[in-house]
Amino acid sequence: MTAPETRAGVAPVPQGARGHLRALGPGIVMALAWMSAGDLIASSVSGADYGYALMWALVLSLLARYVFVAAIAKYVLCNNNSSNSIMEGFARIWRPLPFIIGLCAFALGFGYATYIIKGAGTAFYNLIGRPGDSEWGVFYSAAALVAVTLLLLFTRRQYATFEFVARAAAVILLGSFGAVVLIQGFDPAEFVQGLTFQVPESTGGFESLVIVAALIGGVGGSTTNLMYNYFLQDKGWLTPKHRKIQLIDLAVGMLVILVINLAIWVTAAETSVAGSAIDDANALAGLLGSTIGLAGEILFWLGLFFITFTTFPAYSYGQTKLLMDGVVNTFRPAGDAASQVAGEDFEKKASFRWLQGGFLLVLPLIFSLPVMPSFVELTILVNALAAIAGPIIIIAIIVLTTSSKFVLRQHVNRWWMTAALIVVGGIGVWASYQAIVGIF
Image (tube, rainbow, N blue to C red):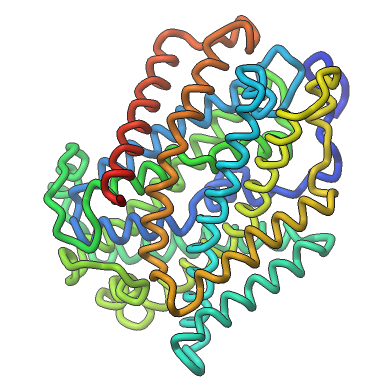
């Protein structure tokens, strides 16, 4: 990057970080890195248990994500402190805040890993024909995938491999679930009614409000949205002139996620098992199987495998970087400039690899053991809990983007932008409350 392309004093992104998050963007590839098993499971369970009734929560959560992530990007691109890290912005509000948020992100990263790795193992075990002991087959499959991931993490072109898998996942998901919707059709009247903020009585495997909280927590307000900071660094989008293309790219990503989720939702809502409790991955595979036979089940397992296998390497990387970025911005010496901190190449540190590999890849394997909760149960509960962290982060983002103390004066939020963020914050608080009440 040449000097004229940067804000005054902005340090260039370390070359060691280039390419590390290419699976996060642009467009469709970014969407697949964001779209986790939480999206697939929440949409499937919602459609199977409640038909179209809770579809409004999905649309609302994606709108919230767009507003929230666009605000994060605004600070990264348009701040007045020569920084390209959102954690540096949190430190300007309150020095301990980056550490608190980073620790929270890392803890949630562990929670995400428990079900994502188990989901990948479950899908892979089914795709290879369920050999051997069915109770331990998922664990062995998950362990094998984690071993492959650890091996890839120490090879030169590891993220190029993950990018290829992510692109394949996009094609398979859009093609397979879209084709099923076209084959089986859907009820337009019920579809429209599902957007009218109705909350039915709990009749499925999970409380309806817990599912709503999971949708908002898993899609709209989780700490994973902060990973977008590193996507911008990776693409070299670090100045106000990149704002327009960033907003377009973000909109494309949200549209892809919406189309895939709606296709999954409609498939679940229109199957013969709709209205029954779904709390097991095999039952979810049966949703497609009941529509187009064995090919439908294979499509489900392929979709789940590609989503999970492209997600947990990216999540383990991003959540670990959030932790280390938070630690450095909280405990950095007072004399260090923001550009110096932003220029640190965390990935080259041995501590980064130990944290990423040990705590977010190997340790979560415990939850793939037969005695642990099912994949679907872990997914819903963790994503509901993710909503709890949302309000703190949203409040901090509102502060950072509504004052010329933090961003360039011409990029300070207009009143309607701030109002939109306040609404998103209110949704986050409501989802947090519902998550706590519904789970505990």
